[in-house]
Image (cartoon, rainbow, N blue to C red; front, side):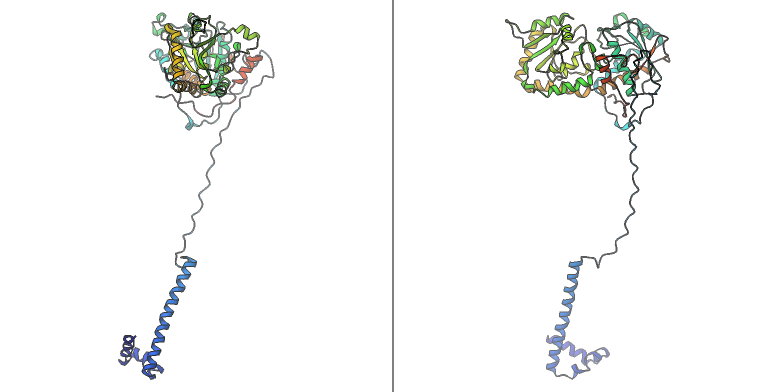
Amino acid sequence: MGDYLDSVRSFCSRGGSGGAGFCCTGPFSAASPGKRWVLATVSAFFFVSLCISIFIYWNDVYDIAGNYFFKASPPPPLPPPPPRTPPRPTIKIDFPFNCSKRDPAITCPKFNQSVTSRTDKSSAVTCPQYTRWIQKDLRPWKMTGITRDMVDRARDFAHFRVVIVKGKVYVERYQNAFETRDVFTIWGIVQLLRLYPGKVPDLDLMFCCEDLPAILKREHSNVKHLPPVFHYCGDDKSYDIVFPDWSFWGWLEVNIKPWRIMLEALKESNNKTKWKDREPYAYWRGNPYVSARRGELMRCNLSEKQEWNARLYKEDWGVERREGFQHSNLEDQCTHRYKIYIEGRSWSVSEKYILACNSMTLLVDPNYYDFFTRSLVSKTHYWPIRTSHMCTDIKSAVDWGNNHTDKAQAIAETASKFIQEDLKMEFVYDYMFHLLSEYGKLFKYQPTIPPGAVEICSETTLACPGDGLWRKFMVDSMVTSPKTTLPCTIPS
């Protein structure tokens, strides 16, 4: 404090204009040294206190108000973004279907089924692997193309001819097929055009409904005149073009429902009994009289002398028809850990139902294939059984599976998953679409309507004139509106 007073005195004694006016006049200059010291002390204390009070005040204001007094003014808010245009809704078109007039001479409706809804091109999915076999089946005609003469040559092997012109189906029949194979096959083609209206190209094809392949390689060595014939199965010794069989739309004579309904029924049946809780034997039920190999299979049945781990049953369709098919529902036959598939005269439609059953399939050496079985893998989707060692192989397979339940169950589930996911009706139609589209690209002529052909649609000679199961199966399998997405894409 003494230093402070000395500096004050020095400032005043210099007589500067600023100093004299402020310090050396008035009562401060007239006071005694003691009083001047007290006044200086009080003034200094007051000045320091004032500075501290001001600091505390502004510090409290900042704590309460934040940086409100110190921040810059905020920029004006941005204008709101323009409203988004809502996506264009998909328009579903329901095809008209009127069976009120039970007139046998009823004609197809005038409604143009080539008009379709907007297709979402971004929603296409990859096709199952079995679609890759389409190119192999059509390879014999890649170099030559398909001429009218080739198609006409196929007439001797065909039950009917299908011509598609401008999105309409025309059929010419040549001979009666077994049961209603031809009717439900044609029905399936009509439904394909309802699913993809205006997308199937003009084409001309011959269809064989027999069990065995028709165009044998040993009889058709000249590929320049090779007749293209569509059929349900093929083998390494034939040129038949493989197409989905009639049972996908229902097998009327044995009360097998359309595939879409059967697939769901089999799925529900699989959930009723866990695999490990099923009967630990191999199961088969069918007609043993259609082939010698099936007759041999029956020798593997349980007997007093031998246990082959097989439970085999003869199916008498005459009795089943009389009793209303009470014991032949396929969804009620998924009760064993293992199921046997064996061909009849040729391939059998039973294969897809057996594979879907969530039982490990024991596949007896097949000679024939249908459109999807060529993508099945041994010991992944099924267990192979040799014809020459049928009984011992069945016993060994069952013993192995019962001792390796996790691995056997995995094979069963892989096959069932393949059927449920890769063989659903959506992909069956896509296979048909790609097959007919690729077939149509090979034509060297413009298909025309044959003089003896009649136009076929859902209302004409198919669903409307039918009664009972005929009509029920067709209505249950009918495509009611076009698909709004693209067909699947064939894998490279």
